Length: 183
Image (cartoon, rainbow, N blue to C red; front, side, top):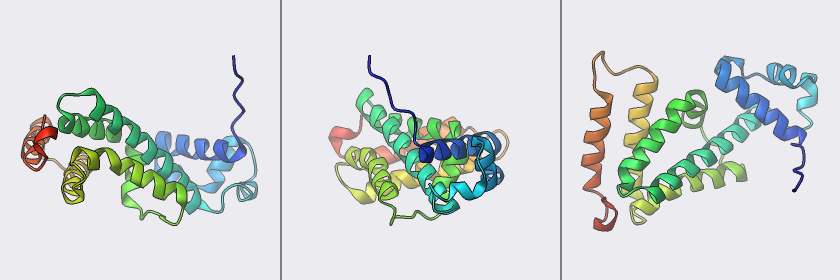
C-alpha cells in the first residue's frame, strides 16, 4: 500500500479557493477568505500564490482539466460521441456553475503553462471528434457554451424545452462532422 504525500500548501490554497467558489460563489473568492479557510494570515498566501489572478488561473487550469476528462470519457464510451460530448459538457457545467463561469467569463492567462496546457487538453476531445477540423470544433464549442451560459443565467423563457434545444442543436451540428464520427 503506497502512502500519498500530503498536499502542498499551494494545493491546499487552491483547494480552499475552489471550495469557497463552489459553495459561496465568486464574491467569496478573496485572498482574505481563502487564508481564513485554511487558517493562515492573508499575507502568507503570497508566498505560494502570486496574486488573486494566479489563484483564479490555478482554478481555471484544474477546471479545464476536469472538463477534458469528462469529454474524453464521453467520446470513448458512447456510440453517438457528439451527443455524449454535449451531455457531458452540460452536466459538468451545471454541476460546477461558478467554476464554469470563471473559466469562460475571464480572459485566460495563456502565459501560465498550466492554463495553456489545460485549454489544449479540454479542446482535444472535440477537435478529435471533428477529425481535426478546428472550425467545426469551435462551432460545436460555441453552441455548447452559449446554450449552457443561457441555461446557467436562466435566460430561456419559462416553459422553454431546453432538452429539445440541445437535441436540435446536436442534430444540426452532426451534419458538420466527418461521416465516421456522426454516430
